[in-house]
Image (tube, rainbow, N blue to C red; front, side):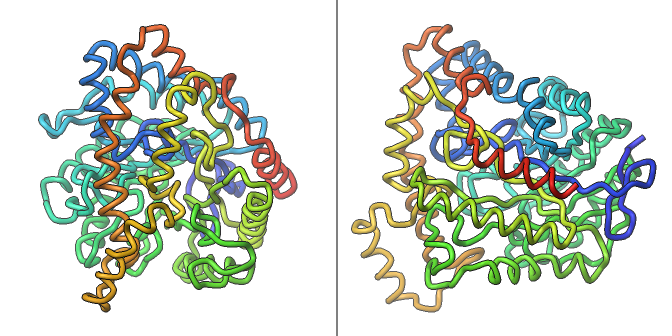
Length: 459
């Protein structure tokens, strides 16, 4: 039976002991993201291009090896030794269902997920299974494997039916696993009008509960887990998950304390933002869990010292509210992770990643200043001709960058990324994949120590 359940404003284990889930998000693994592993655009476009270059058999070998190396026993040991008790595991629906064969569950797709859930459970670390990319895309960005800026999931009943069916299969598979803390069914939904998401959550909760009545549900609010007004009831045994990224912590962030994009950011502002994003949880007396947060690091010692201070301040705020958390992200190519790939992968793709960063071709690595002279006329045109245009979710400046940089330019870069794999031998492909193995990674020691110290001092 599941070990955890919601008891008032806390999670408790089978003995009734309060449990505060604190750990990491395993981003870039079963749901790959462009800034995490260095490719451009969305995962499906990248995989198709790489398949064309490598051929089916070698494509399968490379990605299977990458998934195996990216997280294994050594990674689980590190997280255990840090004192973490939770890993949020983002997954892409493509592993479990094909678009050309909807509603047919792919058994093989569970192999790596089962492996990591078991590795963590053996070390008494809970897993939260997070569906990060849903059929049709539940939000407007790359991290839902969306090649456009339209969240079609909310427009078509077909996509919603497939998501319900997939969750019934996932819940049936893990319903008796005590080290699965629960299910995070929709990462960062972006229902523009906010009219479909509430009724859909009602339907989805009912369907999952019919299969697995015991596990905790971790439900994100609308507008990228910041708006909880869409919930029409407080479901039993449910955590309502907020995401709490600090404005000054982004790649385009300014000094801390100081101004970012005209907004003053200091510790008081961080606390005000957190309290606003968790008002629903406190009003309903349900647990507070921050499913994602964490700054981006630059390699500049002065700036990174400020980013670590942002993180310290956020953790202190979370501690004061007894909030659990899952920092984003565990491993990447150097922006945020506790560990970063090195060796052959960075030697082959380092120049490409630098070009992608120069062009601002992915949001997480973008300072929003790249190619400013090229985009400035477009920004001025839109400001002049459409001064009241304020598209969902983040306004005109972000929308223009999304369409031009993160979709148009990013998609133009996809063939270039794939071509860098052409001519690789099997041995070279294995070495590239193994660059993500912990033994070959560079550990971000100040971050690891900061998190470990916080967990140790605040049991």
